[in-house]
Image (cartoon, rainbow, N blue to C red; front, side, top):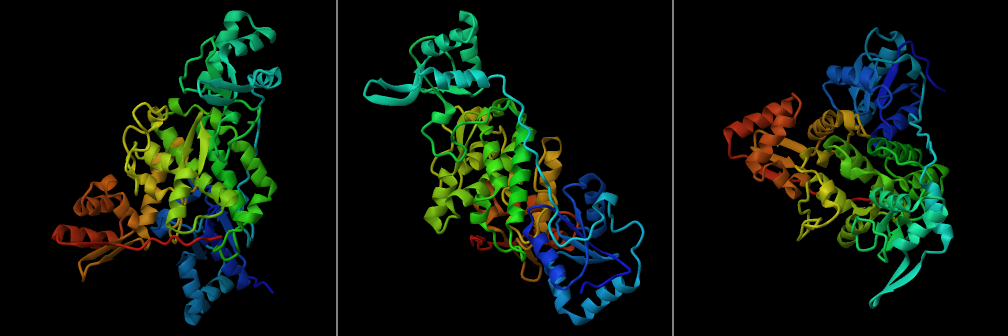
Length: 481
């Protein structure tokens, strides 16, 4: 039977956080009622206050009235300590909720043992170009063409396309202009990847007929072109909602097969067919950062559902190089997104060449300067999560800094003053050039990006003394399916 408290247990969480779900499950098992405050929904009013009081940039954060317990691990430790647990239960049994803090917004006042729901409505405004794409499909001009010794499947010529548009009622010049527009906006593309449209026998193809194994390959939705930022956010929010719904109660396993059969996942796949039309080439740096981080993280989950998680070194290599989406008319693998776009076309782990060659049409999309913060935003695998899972262009740098601080607070950075050693996540070894290229530069970068804490003070002491030994921790590749 659930205990009735005079006080209140408050748990701050975000959607898609395994550690949050595990903490909720642990409280539920003990029949402890709690108020779940979704930081996703109340970031401006709650997040900053929570961080200021606790000094911690991660979730979950759990309070028994004003007593700060910590995260999931600390909660489990408290439950296993009879005296500590008795103290917490006594606090909420006999004392009313305090004023001021913990912050509980009025519309989040609910007792819960399930994750907050962050729904996404897929609103599709009809695309004004849809009738022209359908006219191409119905015209009979799509066929196999032979150019020399090569057969180009499901293609049509530029002059045939112009005739189709004239039959739709467009004057000759407007029909040519429509062809140019469809090429420029990634509805169709020239087989030889020349962006220009010409009224001749050059071959073109609808993106849905590309010879590609991209996970969003196929006939697209007849929807208007979405903004880069909004589509990226919506995809990430929806995949996180799905992921959370199929996450085990203890937060340790994901039912990827169950996800694959859900109606929400079908909606997600429909949304990904809008990606080929987004104009990433004209996006700002901030928009590219938020968009490609969101899409990368969503693509990882999508690929785990469609193809299964990779097992072993070779399978992981194939996974990151072959799993892809068509974005803005071009294919982007996970490797392309991380190393090509977000790391400004740098070679990644095990790569002999840069992802994008000199004349690659994706090269203009790459950031001009690499962004080290992305390493702490791409797929949260730490023991605690930053209080942000979906990135927005209007605040992406602050959100990335917060994700970085959350990572550095965790067990992936270990400082031992007595032994003069620092043990770091393998990420810092793989991408050392992004953090300055040397151990000294790396430690200085970490110091400058840590929030104030004893760990930071200890690290600053070691850096000032010099001769610090840096080691790198084994990376946990275990699968959570």
